[in-house]
Image 1 (tube, helix red, strand yellow):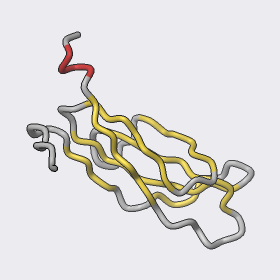
Image 2 (cartoon, helix red, strand yellow; image 1 turned 90 degrees about the horizontal axis):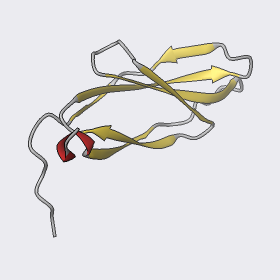
Image 3 (cartoon, one colour; image 1 turned 30 degrees about the vertical axis):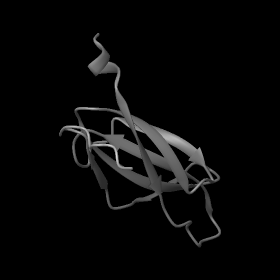
Length: 92
């Protein structure tokens, strides 16, 4: 694998906490096709996470709360992070 394959960009996902009494934590769902998560990341009670994403892909991310017994809640609207274009020029 060359250096380009190892390049990543950080994406920060942040959401409002559920206001119900049953939410124990959150899963962040990440995939490369809409509605098809390939990875589920348990972030516990946190409402913000930063993910390293390989350059060259388009990523679809959503959040789902879960109860203390593990029962999942509804999935949020997906956020799209598009890293298929050229890297942005650094700003000063």
